[in-house]
Image 1 (tube, one colour):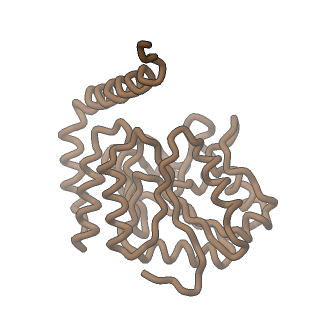
Image 2 (cartoon, one colour; image 1 turned 90 degrees about the horizontal axis):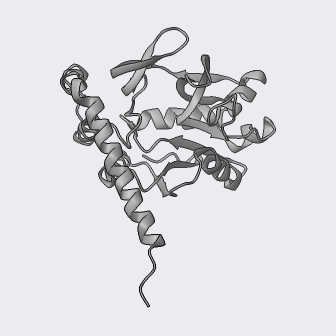
Length: 254
């Protein structure tokens, strides 16, 4: 999909602890939709710092569309619409709250968020970094809201495993589907539900609608053992980290 009237970058950050299969699946979906995606492997880099750096590097007429590594567009139109919305001076993103900070404060999450360099500069270049009172990119949203900027929240309409709620009690969680055409797995590093990501990716590439009910049933069948699988995944990840660290510290014999 070409959008000749726009200059933009679609960017995602991931660390080395993400399954390469998931990274490739996201790349294949974007390639199928004809969308240019920059997947940045930068282990240890803070998400907010990454977004801040991308925004600072943009040309004055460019737009940044951020997307999580475990998020997929289900169609090209949602990307086009988000970019055009940002081009007109608005802020658009997935609706989210941060339970660990304030579950009553709605904001546009960088799970999928489009903002222009011009708007960011007009707002005084608010920080993308998280702090004690704001999550990643929440300060950008709050500055836009205070300035009366047109904001569109992409809201959930279904999820495989409800875990949290927006202020209006709309649930979201593992495997959330958003209006307009987005899917977000959440916590992909240790999730026992990664199968859903691959199913959705395959459906997009095949040009068919995902059977959300069937996917929910499959998730519910796995749910009773999901905590054990998550712990096992964490244990494997920690073992890999320990082996990697020991390789750095062990000195060769003279």
